[in-house]
Amino acid sequence: MHYNRGIMFTMTTVLAMVAMAPAKTTTDVKPFVCAVMGEAMADVTTKGYHDYNGARFWFCCGGCDATFKKDPLKNLEAQAKKGNVAGDFMFDPVTGNRLASPGIIAQTSDYKGIRFHFSSAANKATFDKEPAKYGTMPKKEALYCAVAGEEIENYASAASYVDFKGVRYYTCCAGCVNKMKSDPAKYAPSAKDHITVPAVATQPKEN
Image (cartoon, rainbow, N blue to C red; front, top):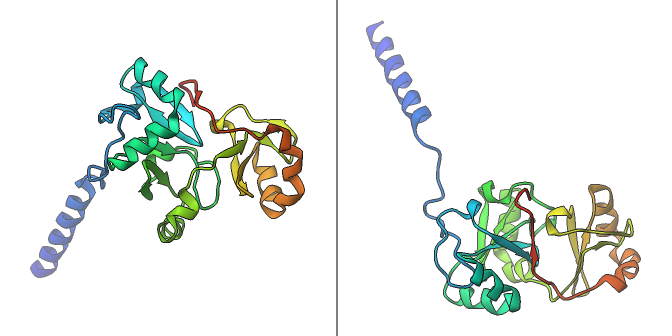
């Protein structure tokens, strides 16, 4: 009886210690850096940012965000060469679906200066096998839903994207996602007048 109580006490103690143990943190993950200066951003939630090519970038000062806007790709490539992570991607790169809160999703991979998040471990594994396939930023995009025929205000407003013949087509809502994915050749032509080179866009804080 006393032996059983001892076992129960030990098990209870272990469980209590597990319960009190802090959840796994991201201290082993590289911090985001200013996309121009390369300085670590201690708190990206309180700094200004711009969105570019489906990713969010932070800056240490107003001068840096102006510099980034002039040539975002040049600045991103410079940080990538240094091994820094400057941007946070808003979509699962395997499915193309928008992630509600990419910054808190545990499954991540860094590639060419961008941190990618995944809705599942399987998607991360798929990405890690072919990062160039899923993590390369397109040179052309259409912030226009080719299915619904509607302008999309910004990346944060898009539901998903589909890459087709070198162009990234964003969709406006969940109802259009599957249609665009199932037959991009059918819908893409309706967005031909909305295809542009990706540009930097300032987003309101609530996004």
